[in-house]
Picture 1: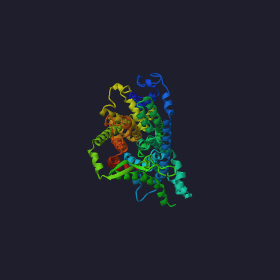
Picture 2 (picture 1 turned 90 degrees about the horizontal axis):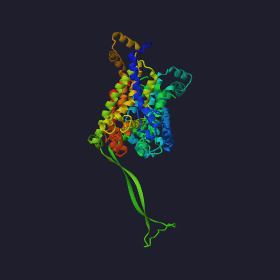
Picture 3 (picture 1 turned 90 degrees about the vertical axis):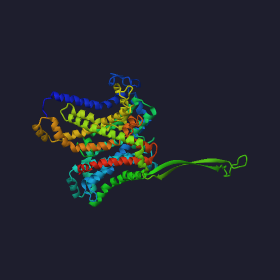
Picture 4 (picture 1 turned 180 degrees about the vertical axis):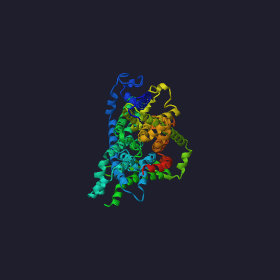
Length: 283
Length: 314
């Protein structure tokens, strides 16, 4: 990209195209926001792209209504508990493995193959484990519990932790840990007191990304939960079945579901490329 | 603690976790796929004499002991070995065939559009733009949006009687081919930004000097793109392609929310059909067999890319 150059006609045209593209991708989210602020009577009669105040008188009634229903609140609480617990669990189990794959050399099975083995869990179609998981949870009496969904979500996001953070540890200098161990630190202390603090920004970013994945998970949630453990995505699906098409509420629910992971995406922006390609591409 | 012990202790929890929660279910699923599981509720009715407080039978007026009926319900699961019948059934099942076709069309169309469009946008955004950071942030939003919510959100957008796209007169969700097109469109909306973002990052990592040298040779930006930029991006393109293929083949959330698999079964993806079979009609043997076929297909795709993949994690 050339710098210190006049903004040419060509640049202007390309800029217009780029802005238009961004608007196209933004439109659905804008439309949800616009619909969520409409009175039911305005939902289908609004002209143009439905600008609040201009095309209709906005109201916060739909938001107040939805946020005050116990089902929505319960689903929000459930989703928060399940995603948070699954994230922490995956980090607890996955971080030492990520570190070990970066620092130690395994003989019988090569590090490379171990890493790809973890990675392959991510590629696995979840439908292949949903039936046995359902049957096992039914036998254990764990259907419709937070625990079942915490375990399964932790399983899904574990490969992210191992593969992405392995890359992070590889990029950290080993000398500091070696020095600490010369001074008498154990292997565990070298990991926890030296390497982990250095990797912290990346650990937090990875934690945010896997939290969003757990938050969005639907297939297992709808299989396992029926009442007490219903998460936000399942709550959305259920509401449509029972209440019919009420677009103004649907828009509110869609936004309630989408806002946390979307905010996370913006917060962890710098890490998204690395996170979503499991460390294969450095952003 | 020796180094060898540390090596094991660090790695073992994660390995055990995967064995328990992934490998064991997969093995169990393989067993199920060769069986037919029938869950029945067996009802037994037994007549028991009614006793009074002292434990003596209560007699009816005619002198016989009075009885009441106790109903016991017990759910019994019977496993019948089916051999390979569940697997051969897939290939004779029209619904399975349709769902496989829907999935293949979806995967090919959605992934290729995402890659081409993502590359185009990445090249566009790699130029001088006003507020590039802001525009880039806007483009990121769809990636992390809850897929189920996205499905319902687009249901309102594709609504044919008064939705924002109803002026087109297109039967977005009510006609079979258009409905599949709509499902593809939603996935394109959600995942083109992913390809875009990764490609943009890769473009910005290309050596400037190499580009400047090429610019001395030719003034054709198109030639530079084809002969310098694209080959340089090849490894990244392959990774994005693999990740998108593996992800797209699992298609479930969007048709679940957007079309419910309809009209008819026109947008019922393979995973959706297996889900219905196993967890709505509880034909778990057949569903497991279907899942295994999908698993094998995914494994073939991954193996095709395996050497490349292993290299990038070396």
